[in-house]
Amino acid sequence: MDTLTVLCIVSVALTGLTAGSGVLPNGPLMAAVGGSVRFNTTVTPTAQPFPVVTWTLIKESEEIPIITARTKNITDSRFEGRITLFIQTGSLELTQLALNDSGEYRVLIITDDDKQISGTTSLQTLVPVSNATLKVNSTELVEFNSTVRLSCSSFGSFINFQWLNGSAVISAGDTVQLTDDGATLTLTPVTRYDHGLFKCRVSNAISEVTSEPVHLSVSFGPDDTYLQVSPLEEYIAEGSNINLSCFSASRPSAIYTWFLDGKDLSKFGSNLLLMNIQQSQSGNYSCLAFNGNTMRHKISQPSSVNVLKRISNTSITPSTTHPTEGRMLNLTCDAAGSVFFREWTKNGLVLVPDDHITLHDKDAVLSFHTVNRSDSAPYSCRVSNPINTEEITYNILVNYGPDSVQIMGPSQINVKQTLTLTCSAESVPFATFTWTSLNHTKLYNSSTFVKSNINSSDSGSYVCSASNNITGKTISAVHILTVLDEPVSPCSGGCIAGIVVACFVVFGAACGGGYYIYHNRKQLKNHPGENTSTRSDFAAGGKGQDNTAEIKNQEMNYAQLGPFYSKDSGKVQLKVQDNHTEYAEVRVRNGPPSYEDHVQRMTRQAPQPLEANGAQVSGQVHSN
Image (cartoon, rainbow, N blue to C red; front, side, top):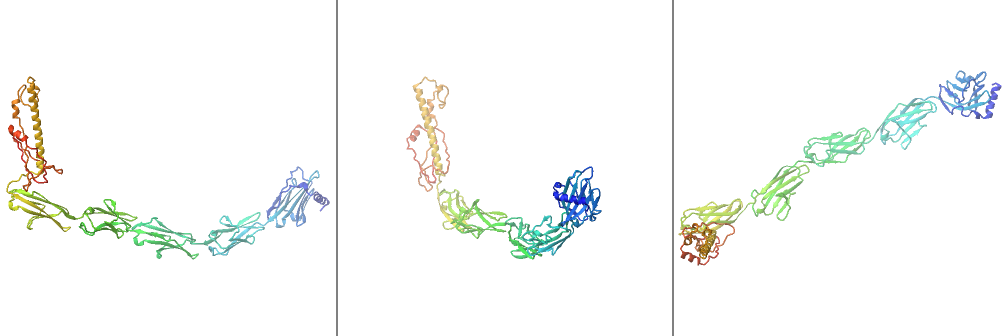
């Protein structure tokens, strides 16, 4: 080394290179072996080369001069052909880098005015990463049972390892261990989340390589197994279709087996389709999930499937077809299908058990302790389940009687007339009637007994017997008949009452007319000169005619009533009957009575009210 170079180096050392701070980039600079690196200074280029530029490599306290440039360049043999000096800025380019090119690089520049510019940086040469390889001890794993170890190897210098599961970076944790400076990854035990593609990424400052992925298959499960029924209904109608599905988290997918009430159905698959389901298929369904890799199984909670038959063929059956008053009666309500509820109604109103009726056999039987005629009505039985409802009605007609046998007809009748007697009774069904005499001689089979041209030998007792062939009951009534040799007035008490009313009307009209005539005659006597044309038209005659001589010839009608006799020849009294009306025929004989007859009748005692009591009465209406 010549004297000038040594002096320059010593001068730089003594000044501490402070004048060159920031001349070179901060190190270390990274470069690949076999590549190149350029140390650029921050010095402003000059028109003329710097008088002196010196580059030195400091390696393990050894200073190795690279190049010294002044009037003549001096280059170390180790760098011959590998360097380029840019004399206007002092920058240096180094090519064909080797590992031993790593170290600290210094530059010293002396300007024309003897100023010194110096700088320092470092270089790290690296072997690029290559051939990253991943090895694993097993790829088929079982959750919680297996441990897996993955190892990564690569060429390169100053390399780093990073592990990836898919795109997610793996960090050390409870079940994750990183050893051998990160080159080995251990998972113990594996979980389902460790399933997937694993890679290792190898890098240094200048390069990066990722290994081929390795697939880890982690089997797990089955976990909790669930069963789903569709449609989800509490009750299913017989003949419907339902689908049962089984779910469980498992890798690989579980194998499913189906059970009914704990019995293996030998049905496999995640779905069980029940077509046209029958009531016999009701029960608790469950499914078993099995994983052949993990050798684990899990059974679901049972799901209840309730299949019901639809209600059909509803009927009501009576214990007897002829309910009879005073006897027991049962109505039984039957139906095909799954019966949940029965409800009885009468005339649309819900029946409530009491002392008269009871319900038993799950309300299938309605019992009447003793049925009576008021129980006659329509009775309905409504049978239902959650699927459907049916209702049927049965009409009860209670048989009773005969009761209250009555005979209608005359108690007296005239010979040669026609006798009609009518017998009636309260009875369901209608009673049959038989007429007999008191000595049990059968006379007639009908409700009405008719005999014409009657004679006195027909007097006596007539017995009407009413019979009900369902109730088996017979009841009789007796009618006593008297046959009279003389005609008997056919007028009844109501008839006579009508005659009395008519007579009162006629009598009132006669009295009013008499009073009117009397009053007019008196006015004529007191006012003989008065114009007679103003008289009432009640007095016959033309204008101004004297009609006083005609007054005695005015028609006067009257009625004579009584005496009244009953059919047994006894006298009776009349009264007005409220329940019915009878009519009387009033026959009027034209022609005025004599004055003496009129006076005699007017002085008679007024008739008193008479009671008829249903007896026949006789009356005469006279008109003179």
